[in-house]
Length: 141
Image (cartoon, rainbow, N blue to C red; front, side, top):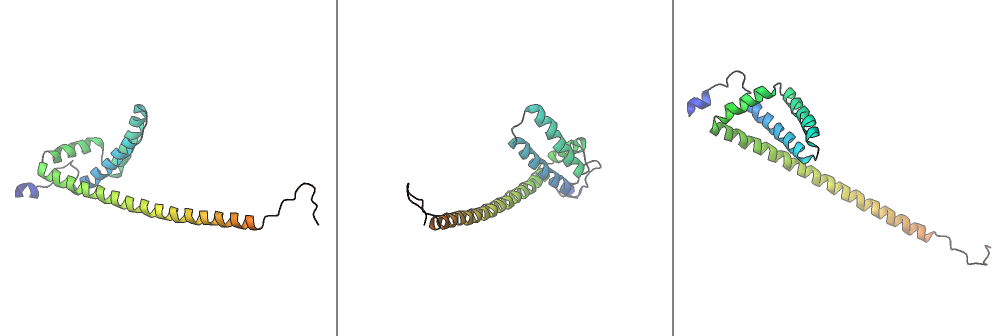
């Protein structure tokens, strides 16, 4: 088991930490693509572009990603550890996003309350300053 930990990553394989970061991003793109209801051909066209862009950002390609995935998958303990990190990072991102959404909802709620109060105040002022309507046949003095 110690020999496995001391082994260096073979040439052509994405280093462990970079692979973890890449897997996090791949799963984010996966989630995005699943959440979009698009036609299969559109999904393929734009989905592939998203993955290609992601791989470019990580200075890799699909072939190296596949080789690296196979390499790490053949080391189940290491792959499990890597996916524990992937899961933690994704959970942290979800938690962070939830907090941001809650903050935005709170701000929107406060803005809506202010807007409602302003409209109510405006309506009350308009009602108070309302010019009485003349009845038929009445004249203005």
